[in-house]
Amino acid sequence: MSHALTPPSMHDDELSLLEDADERARAYVASVADRRVFPDAGAIAALAAFDKPLTDYGAPAGETLALLDDIGSPATVASNGPRYFGFVVGAALPVAAAADRLALAWDQCASSHDNSPAAHAIERAAARLVLDALDLPAKAGVGFGTSATACGIVALTAARRTLLARAGWDFDADGLAGAPEIRVVVPETVHVTVKKALRVLGFGMRRVIVAPVDEHGRVDPARLPVLDERTILCLQAGEVNTGEFDPFATLVPRAREAGAWVHVDGAFGLWARASNTSRGLTAGVENADSWTTDGHKWLNTPYDGAMVVVRDPAALSAAMNSDAAYATAAPDAQKNRTLEFSRRARGIPVWAVLRTLGRAGVEELVDRHRAQARRLAAGLRAAGLDVVNRVVLNQVLVRGATDDATRAIRAAALEPGDLWFGPTVWQGRPAFRLSVSSWRTTDADIDAAIRAIAAAVR
Ligand SMILES: *Cc1c(COP(=O)(O)O)cnc(C)c1O
Image (cartoon, rainbow, N blue to C red):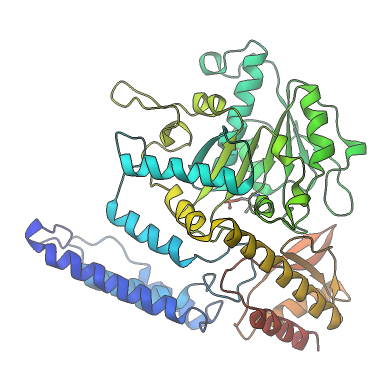
């Protein structure tokens, strides 16, 4: 008999299985601050237990869950803990994780009001809170997608479709063959996922125009390529190495004057707008045409949760429309604003965080991480390291005395397993990069990281 077929009479088993999962989840979270941040070789080797073919008759569900926890948990990266400084991943705020747990029990197909009135209303509320928190145009359309990558594909699709419509071209009917060319300008430091989105959409990499950047990685207005009404200008809020911002206040008006579409990749940096002390970094970004940002990075919601925001909601809904005879819905139905048709309500944890933290809470999160990044930078400088960036946000970019020293210091600091941060290359030379973005990170964690890296220098 297959173990997968569980008749309704076995309801008790379902509840005890969920209880078991909750207990295991509780134990994991309770231990997350004390776990190795990157698993040891033994835990990784044990993952071979998952390398099994499909069986004929399956296994008991409880056993499946136990395997997941017993072998899976020890080999996780404690990115949900306080001393993970890689990739701006953030941790999951308790209310976000809890709201997601409940939403999983609801198991809603959150396509539209007809599929789930609750999901539709809550994501609509989430959209409003996002626009409020980010101080973006109140009438903009918001789609909750899986990632900034996917949301970037959505925004760039809406951008191209709109520019082509203005040129009298019906993209939906006639596609790209024979269409007027839409040019794309990206910063020299553009994030790889924006390039990926452009590649997927058929903007060949050789045709994409590169805007030169200054020493901080920001587009240099003096060297901005020519823009016109058939150009999409991609800018960024939060460069992935330095955390710097393109000079929107100068560039966006020029682009709008030329009739270009401005898209802003603000995967983590857009949240600088949530704080009075850092909002100035983003000045003028509100005049762009579209923005993407993540929940799962700085807002500390679980994966995968991101947002696309488009000034003209009709441009978004027309580009993403998936109405059918059996499934018509409002323009703001999430199936008409994202790539997905059947989908989880990714906006629920975003709503939960923003409702719970309020303006002051989000501001405090952003301010704390910025202050901790500066604390980290000061400590590392005192340890003799070269902090390469200005640390305007939550990114600290670091080098040793030589390239070999940079690599060796990172390797030695990571060796004990109680913190993690990633390598990068900045202006052609190796560096390492620490991002402060977990709500769990305390000043004591920052000081511990400084001590560990300082010891590695010695
Ligand atoms: C992480 C990141 C992205 C991609 O976001 P995903 O949600 O991982 O797809 C894009 N741009 C920047 C600047 C990023 O940091």
